[in-house]
Every structure is written in C-alpha cells, then in structure tokens.
Image (cartoon, rainbow, N blue to C red; front, side):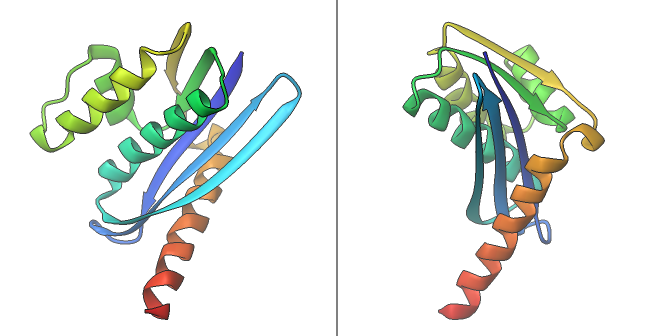
Length: 135
C-alpha cells in the first residue's frame, strides 16, 4: 500500500497556487511540487488530489491510502457530493480516477501531520510566482 499525502496552497484567494504531493510505500518515496496557476485555495486542494491520483495511476499503484488536511475535500469524497457547483467537475474527475484503483482510501489528518505535502505545495506556489515574473 502507498500512503499519499496531498496539499494545495494559494498565495491569495485566488492567487498563484501549487500542489504538494508526498508518496511513500514499498521502500520508495516520491515528492512532487506542481505549480497550478492562479486559483482559489479550495481549487488548489482539489487539483492536488487529482494530480496525485493521476501520478499513482501512471506509476501503476493499485492500493492507495490518501491523507489530506482539507476537510472540504475529505468530506466531498466521503459523501461523493459537493455543495459548491464550482467544485463539482473537480470532484467528478477525482472520483472517476479513484475508481480505477483496486483499493482507495482517504483520511483527514491535522495540518501538523501533513507538513511535507504543505512544504511541497508552498514551494510550487513560489515556483509559480517565479514563472510569472519571467514573462
């Protein structure tokens, strides 16, 4: 089983955003810091989730346990429903990807247990900001 820690971050709401993904399992560790462009913090959380699902599928992982400090994303996954229509297509895509695993779990964790993913997300925000100044 692979444990997948995810976090999204935004510098502003909306603002430059990034996804942080930390994966560990079977003696391997993977770290991803992915700039996402300009979006809200909640959108960044969903995009981090989707990117992590895509990475796990590309790597051929079959059993995954996701950890997030986003109560919004965790509740949406548990209920397979989101109130805000803006997030509905993101949740739909995430659930379609999650359905491709043999076993998929998601668990809410406090921010204090998600520090690596948070640091990776913040790094992606900074990378996003740098790209913006190079144009």
